[in-house]
Amino acid sequence: MSFGIDDLPVRDELRGKSPYGAPQLDVPVRLNTNENPYPLPDALVERIAERVREAARDLNRYPDRDAVALRTALAGYLTDTGAHEVSLANVWAANGSNEVIQQLLQTFGGPGRTALGFEPSYSMHSLIARSTGTGWISGPRDDDFTIDVAAAEAAIAAHRPDVVFITTPNNPTGTAVPRETVLALYEAAQAAKPSMVVLDEAYVEFSHGASLLPLLEGRPHLVVSRTMSKAFGAAGLRLGYLAAHPAVVDAVQLVRLPYHLSAVTQATALAALEHTDTLLGYVEQLKSERDRLVTELRTLGYDVVESDANFVQFGRFDGAAGSHAAWQRILDRGVLVRDNGIPGWLRVSAGTPQENDAFLDAVRELKKEEHSA
Ligand SMILES: *Cc1c(COP(=O)(O)O)cnc(C)c1O
Image (tube, rainbow, N blue to C red; front, top):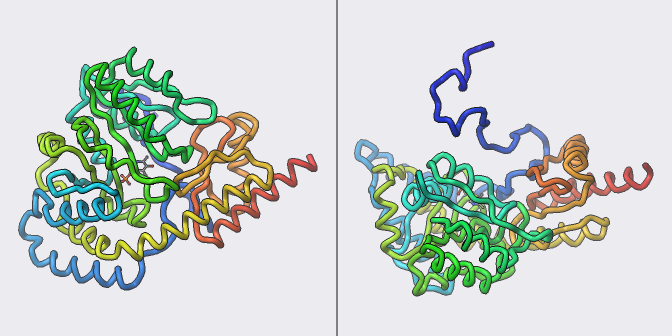
């Protein structure tokens, strides 16, 4: 046997674990990580080059530690699109919303504390909890993947978590959480502890409904987390951000590494924000493609979970073995979708119309085989 991780004195909770990540396979149609399929437009690529060129001369210096220009631009974007006035003091940015979540758990979680999420949901919440020494509590979801308010309130009352995650729209199911549910869970979390409630709105730009950003008013324990990875089509940029009471922004600065956000990242994100209108135009196309996937999958006879995100969860296959076999047969036709380990279900991201056609052809053949079997 070769020398491996478990031969090192790693922390107990990391023993026997494998790193997170979807398979990165080189196939023609990749619809497995909820990326935006559209490359950045030429005008934006030019603007990024310009802004990065300007920033490059000053790379002998540390970047703006507080990312003031970028946070101001993000606040402007949220104010323009979120029906709620947000300013620099309300916004914090980091390398992807994963880092935002990590900073939140370093600040409000940690050893001796717990975080709760309603599963199935975004598995990075529990993984970041583990890596920050925060205990994880799996909260309930109904069979249709909605959150039952009474059951959720009971879980919060029983476990009194320090942090509650509500992912809306939820990944991997696409389910939006109604405003009234979020309000009820916020109240439950305050009665229990009080605890921080993190709304992960990574996909909110794709939603049929509005952002819950206005709920920040008068709720200092609420945090709305966002990302440029999905709607802005900039997963490679690594830029996530949050909006919250200014005290929350002050608190996360206790744990952030100094100069965590490079000057190149700040310059690139500022350039992308200048092109918000163009990028949100792609979002509109993706929303209609998402709706088309829902309709056509249902026509083919699949069960489809109502989606407010840029992906669709469909099934049902015969348990975990059935969804894995279907995943493989779709892959055999050159289309990579995601098996999130939810028995009987697979998730497909909305791609370009051509990519979605290729996917629909693949699942149509799957149905035919099923019927002739
Ligand atoms: C993709 C995703 C994110 C984004 O993570 P980044 O680090 O910003 O790329 C956050 N939350 C959820 C639920 C996601 O699916």
